[in-house]
Image 1: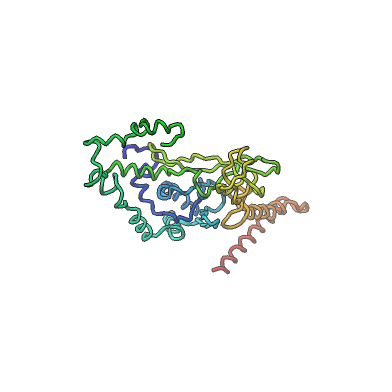
Image 2 (image 1 turned 90 degrees about the horizontal axis):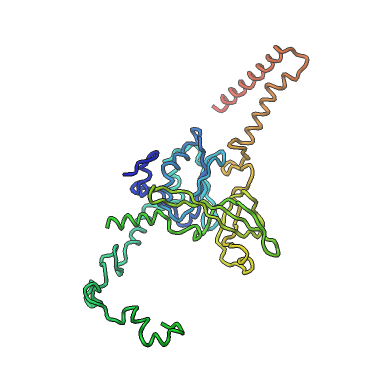
Length: 177
Length: 179
């Protein structure tokens, strides 16, 4: 952790961000949380949740809009807006940050089973090539075009030939390529 | 391989999709206007959007502004509203301002806020009921005894102390009943 600035800089590490426990369901599009700047003992949980877990929440849910509402209302609350138009309201008064995390997980979070299944489904497709796939390039396979770093490709494969070829010159005005 | 994994995490963190692609947004109405022959109202809405900074590895709020079409004229300045991207835009409206969204509903109207959990009015982090109750108490206990002109100063003070005693005994009896 080379850049140790601020309060609790561990929160600014990828390792910490990946540890986020709450992954919202696909229905949830907007999530807002009202907390207090100077909380009383029964309002502390919301502020601590934001301090420790807000960045994690956004990291694990990159396409949800998270909105912080400071000194908004008397009771600390959270509101989730679903795709259908439904609203889910949470009362965070008198709860600690861990209880709040469990609450979010229980109502709107994806279960471990669901996450495991998604991880398996998102694994690389065997038909693909590249960094995250078993085969780097199609030139590795027998019967395919050899690697152009070793063997020069035929002329008709180059854009130079395609745009400057006799046939292409005549048709260029009509923009047929 | 380590580098590619780092890039993947960076991509995830920087939520590549911008607020324009979001299916739903919560925002504050910052400006109002009217357009067209029918003078339909539109609003400029400020939507907070968290952007990830690669160097500090923190999420910073960079708000995005959208103009939203408000056919039913629900909104006023200062409301918190939900917006959705508008798919079918009539051509004369589109040409005047870059209207991309449509107002769906008002979530927190402007003014003294109604607590969503308790549904009570609140003035600056205190419930309206509590404020009124306190005010009435002060009037009953402190100010009313002093309004009785026939009494002397010490007698008025005795009256005040008597009232405080009564209130305290009431509280005790209530708590006893509960227990």
